[in-house]
Image (tube, rainbow, N blue to C red; front, side, top):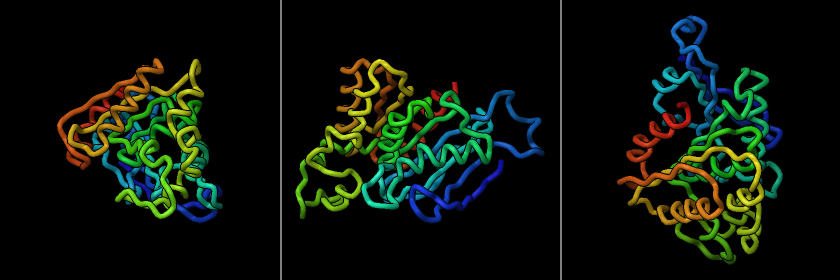
Length: 254
């Protein structure tokens, strides 16, 4: 197992940034690997988080896949209007291209996947739907599908997590956000009749985001989008995610 911390200049963010990476092998271990191509899983952190791995590393050897962990701050993995806030482009375009050209990874959607928790679950859904030609499968855990909740917020308002100015910075005009491309539902509608990444969603029944996840599940059903949706006992915490990420990876790599 090889672990990397890579710093590079991001044109999307107009500054130095970093990502972390785990490869299932090095040259000395190659003979012990499964006889299948190396796939790539982008692991997306949540709100207030940073690049970290919560996918059991033994799965990388079992299924022979690399893990790439970007740091996206509290951006919701969206392209903000301000210079240096193109986080969607950083992940969906720049980092995929970097992985391809530098490491020979993420060669096509059939071997390039996303998994995220909370804000990262939103980011996995949004990024995968924004770049269906680059990502083949999406794992969205306890996703912060908050678009309808923040729509029509006013200056000076705060929902207990963040204030209007923060959401305006990430999502753009909150009066128009439900119809904008910042809303995964808009991206689903735009892809109707076209190839769409496979989707796996899960959320704990005691999670404060359970109703938002149920609503998006119902939306996908109404739009005729095939997907996996699972609930189980648990809250918005690593106990639930540690259990269910194994199920997500098994589904992805099967």
